[in-house]
Amino acid sequence: MRRRFLIAALPLLPLPALAHPNHKPSDNEAQIVADVTAFRERLAKAVTAKDFPTLRACYADSYTHTHGSGKLDNKDARLVSAMAGEPMIENAPASELGFRVFGGPTVILTGKSPILNVKEQRTYDFRWICVYVAGNDGCLLAASQATRLPVG
Image (cartoon, rainbow, N blue to C red; front, side):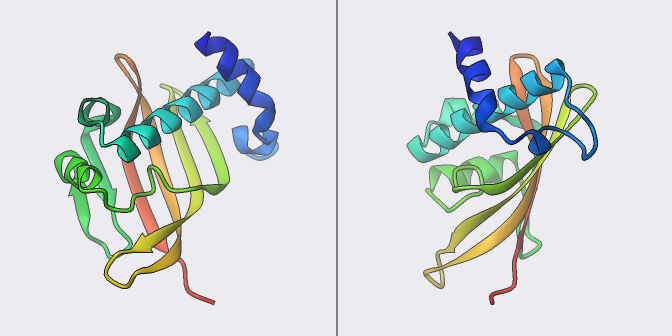
C-alpha cells in the first residue's frame, strides 16, 4: 500500500525538483524523493500532533538546526521546541522545493516557508535547507538551517 501511494504521488512532483539540473532522475532517485516526501509528511504530522515517540525517531542523534538568528539547536532542543508547539519549518507550508539526491542515500532539500515570529506575532518568509540521510528504519533528518528573507 505504501509503495503504491508513493508511486501515485510521483506525478505531483515537478521533475526538475527531483535531481540536479540537466540530470534525468533515475528510478532509484525518484523513489528516494518519494520516500523523503513521505517522511516529511510523517514528521509534519508528528510535530503538529506533538507525537514525541515518532519525533524522537525522526531526528538523527547528531541532528542540528541553525535558526535564522544564528542560534544552534541539537536534537533534544528541537524536540522541546516541537513539544512546546513552536513554529517550525518541519510542519510549515512549503514552496519552491528542490531535491538533490546523493549516494548513501543522502538528500538535500531546499524550500521556502512562512514562519510565525511568536514574539512579534508576524509571519516572515524563510528559505531553508534540510539534510536527510538513510537510517536503520528509513529516513532521518540530520541537519537543517533557516534564513529569514528580507521583507519587501
